[in-house]
Length: 499
Image (cartoon, rainbow, N blue to C red; front, top):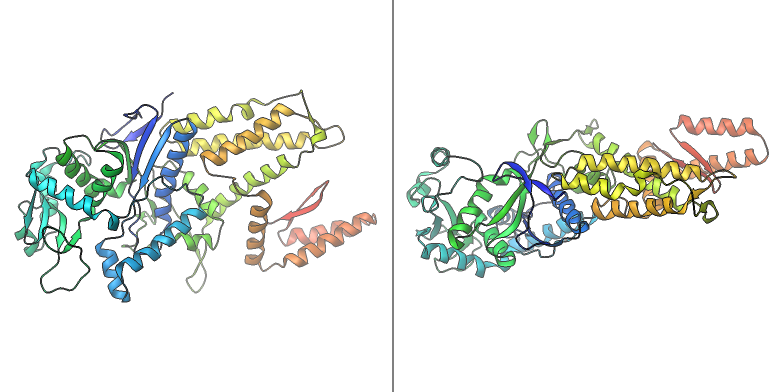
């Protein structure tokens, strides 16, 4: 079955057919770097990370472009508030974004263009639009004329009359005088008279590019006038992506993107998480409380087009103390690592050349690929993963005991499945014991438990068992159980965890 994704333009799930067979060219709107990224930004990056991983796993070449917006009024305003250069502030928060995406295990895009390094392409595109009569200069600004593009509104499925009515209510008197139509949008913003602000030179005077033109210039510069898939959040459908289509297609006469894929929001109390609403949590605030991979699992647990609701807990001082759903996701990730650890612990002498090979082990690659082919259905992919892991653990259990034996082919299939899980969903790529130890240490610290004291009690129990003082050994185990400590005995000794 070919890959099928929901195309916003056609409002339907349709086959994904790259213009060049076997080569997908993808552009995704990246961050505007004026603050630390919040969890919603990470959901966006994760959605297209899995999309790119899946296409590559299916044998497709992918050219993945994700931009950095480092020229923007928010950046200029924030820098002015802090008394620093806009580019200095932008680089600092760009570095923070990269640090957070690395911790989440995200693939780096093949190309990551900055707006500041593509002003030549932006100016050239604006000039092309002016030359074609699709844009006009007005008092140092340059606007796109929506009346010059008959298809305006086709992505958001809005009527031009609705757009005119909505835009007229947002215009101040001065801006209204500069525009020919209320829905016209800025391609270049000139420097206000008498104002001192960061500007860049242009044929129309000093200023800075509008928000929309930058993505058109960068996407077409690297992927051509027409490419395969454009991604972003639902909040970008209008006006950002609508305006991208208008200015790009008016300039080239070609369809900008064959498919438009948009992801849903993370919501807080039924409202979109956003900095403008002040209801956001930064990714690093989340990472302080759980493993980054838990946020990854949480983001995959709901279909990418659906809203993802977030709950949290606070202490008496109003400080965030936890994210219950992400903590539950961490336990699911912990299960992946404990399954890996159990598989790796199967001794060579327990592996034989014949025996049972459960179909869920050998069928995992197909099941995972099929789920993601179907409009990137990540919840189904996680359900297939859970079934696969159940059989990995059953395999490990069958290897125990004096006569425990497992088939070599089954062990190989389990190992290959876990590797595929890491490549496609980006889960389980750390060293198992390192991950499990970090989770255990964090949970112990939050509960006020001393790891050294727990280990001392485990050593006491081990000594009691060695002396056949089973009553004392059981009493120590009970003490630890009452503290929330779960003990696991195996041939290598006693391990412990905090559920």
